[in-house]
Amino acid sequence: MKKRKCKRFTILGATLYYKKRGSFFRKTKYSLNYFPVLDISMGGASFLTNQRIKTGSAIIVKFTIPDIDFPLELEVLCTTRWIARNREESYRFRTGISFNTYGNGKHQNKFEILEKLKELEQRLCN
Image 1 (cartoon, rainbow, N blue to C red):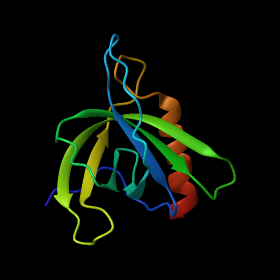
Image 2 (tube, one colour):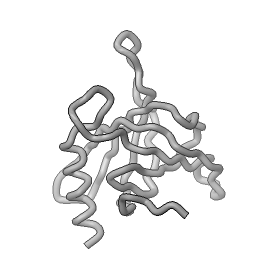
Image 3 (cartoon, rainbow, N blue to C red):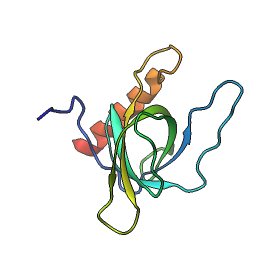
Image 4 (spheres, one colour):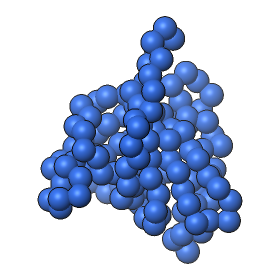
């Protein structure tokens, strides 16, 4: 079994919106609905949704994280890695995403996002 590089943790009440990554000429909009985040790490997350997002899709997610000392919204570039039927009736699918690498290049997430995720992990896991 492959071991994860990053520790996953749960943030109660965390939600996300997502949109497909558009091009320079084609802008996309975030989903109208928000979806519950099951867990998150510095390398990815999983969440519930009613729509099947094709594996390998480039998406942008906007996390909303409540009940901490500072309000936090993170916009993160991601790729869908897996999708599975949700056994519970609340949402149809569980979706796993990996975050794009961190850096200053095109299609990379800013290092500031990594720092905020590290801070969240320290607060919630220690």
